[in-house]
Image (cartoon, rainbow, N blue to C red; front, side, top):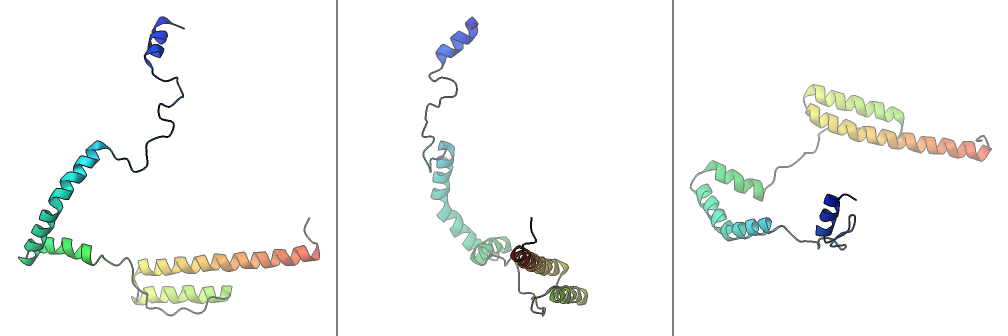
Amino acid sequence: MPENADRKQRGRPFQPGQSGNPAGKPKGTRHVALQVLDAIGDAAAADVLRRVVEDAKGGDLRAAEILLRRLWPERKGRPSPMELPALQTPADLVKATAAIVEAVASGDVTPEEGAAVASIVETHRRAIETEELERRLTVLEARGDTP
């Protein structure tokens, strides 16, 4: 071993590959800087909230928007007003897809909403397909047609 490597090794409190703390960092331990930032935020939070409320009451629309977004979060979606047939067979899936296309074309739903509903129909199609394949495989195994 070269002299330099020996000197570096002597300065190490632990052997390579061995941790000085085998149990690891305790759960919930946070960096000191984050703890300080939390303390600053906790101390000022009530004052900041009070000021935002006062500004909103005074007509500041941005302050009102901040409060309203916290009190009543935006909805991520809405019910899509379209009639779909019961999805039992592959033929029903074709009818459902046609209903989605018609609803988007007529403007009853947005293209994004239509795509979301079509995705659900596609998921159901895969479930029907999986069930059909499982049924066919069961019949073939019962007849002894599989290797």
